[in-house]
Image (cartoon, rainbow, N blue to C red):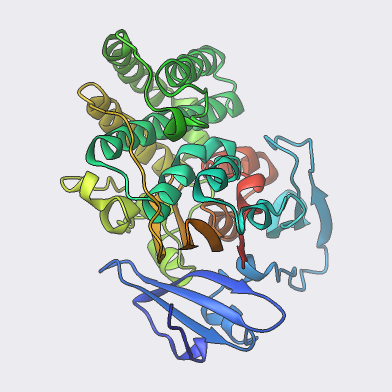
Amino acid sequence: MNAEFVNPLEIKRPWSLAALFKDAHESLYVWLNYDTGEVSFTRWDTVPEELYDVRPVARAYTHNYALPNGLPCSRTLIYGPAAGGLGEAGAFKLQTCGERIDALVPFLGFKNRELGAHIINKKVGEALLFIERFAGQFSISYASLFAVLAFSPNEKCMQYIHTALELERVHNHIWVMHKLAGDASQKVATAHLAAMTEELLRINLRLLGHRYGMGFLRHGPREYEEFYGKIRTLHEEFTGLSEELLNSRIFIDRLHTTCKLDADAVLLNDTGGIPARAAGVARDARKYGVLKALYSNFVPHTEQDGDALARLMVRINEVEDSLAMLESAEWGACKFKPANAFRYGFIETPPGDAFMAVRVEDGRVREFMLRPASLPLYHAFSVGIKGNVFTDFPFALDSFGIYFADADSHGRWL
């Protein structure tokens, strides 16, 4: 990696700030051109204060959040960590005047387990054990990205990776729909979507060897004759249930206009993933990431309104596509050999893109970087939630499908 010292304020769009790794000596910037998929690295001694105005997502990468001065009636509250509709232990600091949320910042960093430190100097096969555990919900995505960067998977293995990724995408998307239905007290739909999620996790166990795919690359695919029949049945059930859910006026009204993030906000905040596509900005790592050859005919689904409903619609369309692909999926055994090199790239996890870089020397990991999917999306959520009311909070947050444990996996280790 040859990264020149360049003032980050000089980097202009269409380059987006995709990652920022700051230590006591310097700051390493990762820039992505979403139009071409090109990636560039630059260095600078510090993070200029002006950067937070032109690249607001830098606040997420450096945990440099502060609430602005509010209205005379404003009060600052702590939302969380384990109650108030949050699906995991996490917290937000927010500013409110009455029922309206005037500003919000996430608490980040307290769930960082420093797993990256355990990877350094490990053999690549041993390192994979830790990679799978950075974020259980996205275990397959991170293991797949690491495998492509640190190994050279054979063609049949790449097909197996493709299948596993789409299984992970489907169960995550349906789980998000389950949470949104629960937020709106749609009890029948909530139960059906929970049952679908459980069935998908059981399919994972039968085919991949683990409910969340941990170890799926190390032991390879299992024999599972009923796979295609179960996927077809799930597909039929999902299509009928999603149509029924979208016919519920109460449900739709709770999502419509909630936590809106329009195209201008997406561009200003260097946002990718589902929030970008829901705002009409077709940013998807399946088109520019390290697995783009597997998605040569893929066309990202987009919506225009940028709200919680639009994010739901993107997910519904993606589940339909993923299940259709899984009905004819193929796979084979994996064969690996370590790739002694410095490699980097992106992958599209269920909520959005994630960046990883790996340096392998003599079959061992000597450098590792991870910018997880959830980290920039917590920032996007903090932008979109302004002006909403407290009752909108669970619909807004759940529509992003993100996790504090994932966001706090961010780091660079040498």
